[in-house]
Length: 160
Image (cartoon, rainbow, N blue to C red; front, side, top):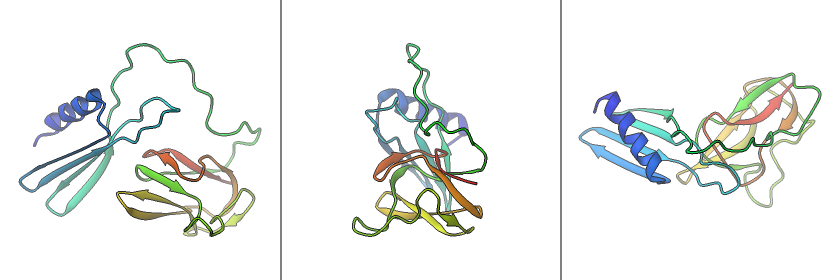
């Protein structure tokens, strides 16, 4: 399947409003998912293309809105100090602050973290993926809440 055909398929799935789509042809497997979030505009789907044993996930271009949407409020709380490094979500899924409901959160605002330390979990297709800090520093902000749907590339933490 050629790149242009994949883009046409992504556009068709996005316009149809589907939240999940899977296509297999020979040794090529394409998986698309777009979580529903009733509080925000439709999220751009993430496309996972697998050929042979190699898999690549790419954010798909979102369809153009029919009418201009009103400006959305910023996700992060307003803060004077915006310095630091942003830890972004590597995949689409559901974010969890702790390994289980009764366990304490991995980190809280003000905690000191080291590179490689687990900050949270993103569940995708029944798999739990640990989100590790890419930086040493202090957790300045946590942009998402427990059990919130997250997108590829969405900011999760600010480490200063």
